[in-house]
Image (cartoon, one colour):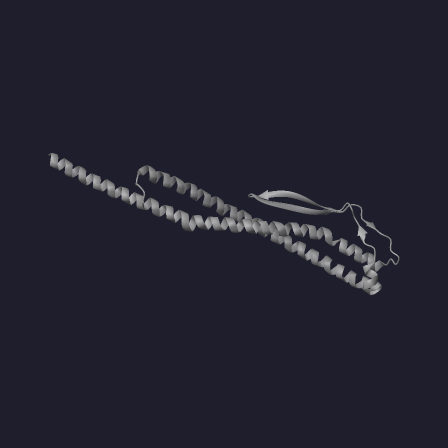
Length: 201
């Protein structure tokens, strides 16, 4: 090592090691918090997914009934529902520096345009697909949160492993080597001092 061994340098290295150890503990706790939030959101996502799939299957059944009643051409020209006031309300939040958000679909005043051949099957199909919107908005927010948490978790794990497996052991070796060199220097100094004292006597 091309380092001049001094006690002050050893103290500096030990202080740096203490700061690195605190950083490792912080990253370890951050990983636990992120993992806990991911598990909570995964459970939430599973529930949302079941609810969405039930609504999706109901919408497909309604679509099949509407197709049987009107045919593909008739259903293609069936007037859609307009909802100019519809919007997704996003509520931001954060966890350990990770930007998260909750989303809610807010319907304005939907207007169903009049149809020449209005039918219960087509109206049921219209309502069934409209019911998917709030479920999709909430599920999209949870999916985005899970992706951001996963990315931050991987970064934190990489940094924690770098500290634990590379930087801290390397610093320990440096401190141990310098302390060994200092002890050798002190022993050499003590030998020279004894020799000097013996020669002067």
